[in-house]
Length: 96
Image 1 (tube, rainbow, N blue to C red):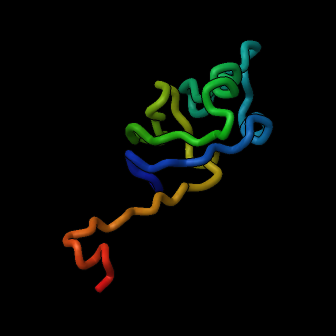
Image 2 (image 1 turned 180 degrees about the vertical axis):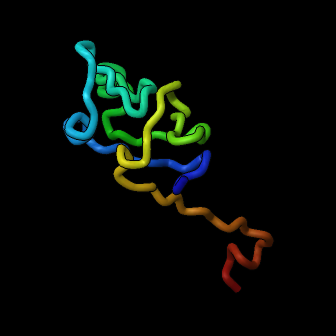
C-alpha cells in the first residue's frame, strides 16, 4: 500500500472512476465488492475531491470524512503538506 493514515489525497474525477468500475442505479461504485463512492455524497461533500485517509484495510483506504473507501487506482495523487519548523528563541525571529 502506497499511502498511510493521515495522508491527504486527491481523488480522480467521477467520470474517470466510472470508466474503471461499474455503478448501480443510485450511483454507488463498487470496487472489489465493497461500496467505494456514492456520486451524490461525493459531489456535495468533496467539490475539490480532497480527502484524508482514516485507515488502511487489506486492499483499500477508508476516508476520514466518510466510511467509504477508495482503491489506489481511484487516487490521482498525494497532496504534500508543508511542515513548519518551530521557532525556539527570539534571535531566530529577529534573525540576528
